[in-house]
Amino acid sequence: MLDDAAMVATWMEFNRAFNAGDMAACEALLADDFSGIADNLSFPSKGAFVAAAKAGRDQGGWTGQEIISVAARGNVLTCHYRNVFADGTRRDGGGLALFDDNGKIVAVRSLVGGGTAMRAPS
Image 1 (cartoon, rainbow, N blue to C red):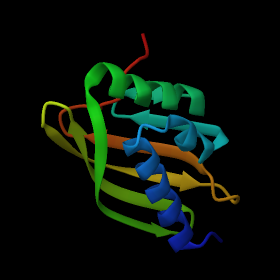
Image 2 (cartoon, one colour; image 1 turned 180 degrees about the vertical axis):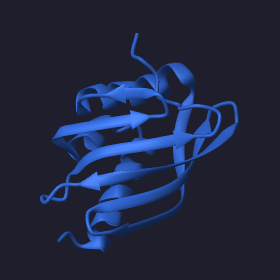
Image 3 (cartoon, helix red, strand yellow; image 1 turned 180 degrees about the horizontal axis):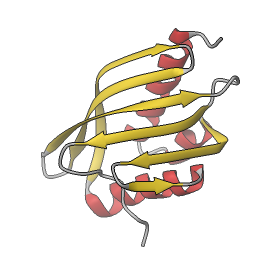
């Protein structure tokens, strides 16, 4: 069984990397067989997920994500967060992350009030 504190630490590392714009560091924390769903958008690979997050930053003004609360048990992590945008708006969201036995994030499922900040890369 995974250590709960280690999962939280990995998630916070992912959040710090995202907020710093370091998408390569984000991708390094995702398992090779990663998949993601954000609202109604599906990402079948870690490359697609990271590209959509980057596009949200580049095209949608998504500047960061504030963690409100996070908890982990077994291999599942829950997170309540607030997406922050360049125009000063914020959108609350929540999600689940599933970790593999190696401590990598293997899946993310999230919902955000007002819609996801992820974008299809152009």
